[in-house]
Length: 351
Ligand code: ADP
Ligand code: MG
Image (cartoon, rainbow, N blue to C red; front, side, top):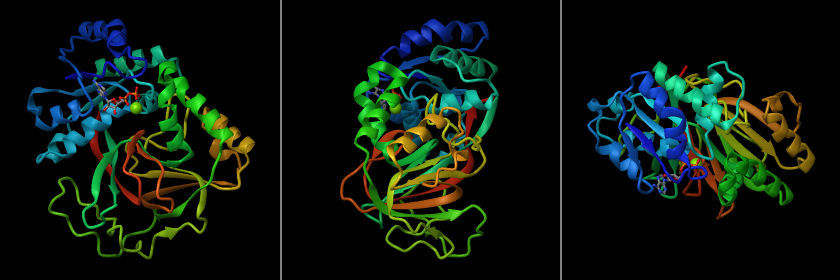
């Protein structure tokens, strides 16, 4: 099943598909049914109810937002454990095509133009190899006893990156360049975000009583998390600083085609790559970081304000009553949030 969001990117996803990918699939003998999404959450509802035994793969031709819907639709099913093993494919048709950029990178290929990225992902689809992919379970907690839980395949962002994601929506007609424009605008009005950040380092073995399984939630239990209204367990690290410019948790390599944000990340390493930038960084230094991110050299930049660490779980408690948090580039409820990785629970058509 090939789900196309006709409004994604510059609104050309359907013509990009028919122009670049359809004949490849036909030549490779890959039968497919096109479904054009009619509204937000259409794809989510569709895969929640679908007879998955009919489909060899669910392929998204859109940005990351439509895959986010599909992943969550699958995880909301009673049979989530089996459903999430349906191979998922991505064809970049949006303005934010982070997962497509990541799998192109995992194939060992050099960075390419947007149309070449589409052809590269089309080719991967024709080959039809599959790999495991990590997901993170994300709890949003205005009501700690009854948290909203989402599943995320890409990122959790707060501060500078999340603001750019949202503010750049108005430049979506320029396609992927929207993030560059958004970054420059945000740099001009750079601000500090206050909050408390804590994480579970990779090497810590867990030794506390995990969150009791919540009967109302489907999906895997989050054995590394305690409820949001309780302090983090003692073997978590609480970051001493409370003034930040950005917090970015990534489970794949690319945040966009030219934002190679987590160079060490692979599809199913079972890790959250946590990057945060402390307040006090100059505009020039921050711009330098984003420029270095194009080549993925920002972590080797010796920037004293940047911290990079690999974790299994994290918690963020923003102090300001209003703000922006994004999950996979989509805006979610603002407030305390925590996440833990579930290594390799999804399946992706990938190199
Ligand atoms: P882009 O990268 O261009 O933002 P996305 O795939 O992220 O593309 O899609 C953006 C949003 O559009 C997502 O939140 C998705 O749920 C929503 N969406 C999907 N189909 C439609 C539709 N037919 N009309 C309007 N919005 C849609
Ligand atoms: Mg999007």
